Image 1: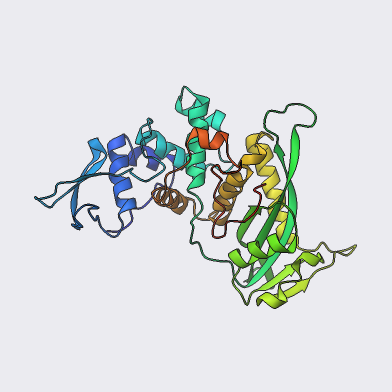
Image 2 (image 1 turned 30 degrees about the horizontal axis):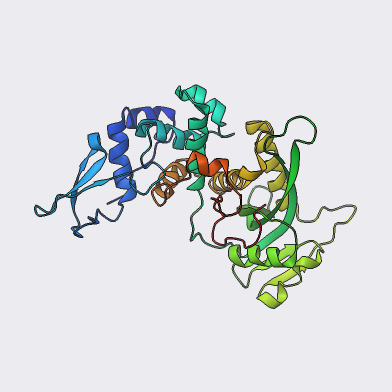
Length: 333
């Protein structure tokens, strides 16, 4: 079954999804791209019942009905599929993204907590567990991002979180200027407790293919790279040239995005979720239509957090925001 073409603009979206029934049919095609398989009898065909948001097995001896939202971030949601599709579209297509308050107002959701939880459910699905590692030439460095302490206001309400990042470098030839140029490719970002070699090694080995050339600053925490199968070059900042310019450009964009969209209101415990959203959007900045399908596709692979999970996020033994291929051990920052 071919993956349907996503909406390319707001007019397309409104025409493609006038009601929840069209959303259900579209979600069916996204979820079972290789064809429906009945979870009870294994029959490889079924009938979509959009009004019930179910698929009925075509085996006369079975007729088992499977919810198209079961096991997904949309499972048992009280909001309509239409509202969820609007959420996916706004998150992946609006340039500055959208805050929970704006989302609540635009879609007429009564409760702020409901809007907040919906957006975080989608964010939890923006990280593919088996995503490809970066390769080629990579800049790796750390930077501090301010997050709001839980229950604090005024002075002392902000705390800085250490974020490690990897930026893929893409070299290309500009025919207009007749010069070779470099631009940012894909990125990976993750909160870490500290910049020790232990945490840096877990991040790099989990997100960058061995054999890649990695550029870092002179921090001793990166001394493991040569022994781990990477080509390593430490760049020392000079008075004229800034070292690792592409990494610093990404971090600057991240800070601007957080401040412009969320006005500094991101709680420190939820920062990993916003890093996931920024990474997802940055890596698909030239593929906005594809991003919509991708968000819905990833959103059919796991159940998202409950509001209680979000309230206790990061605490020992409680739910944690996903971080991609490698889950860091030790204390969650």
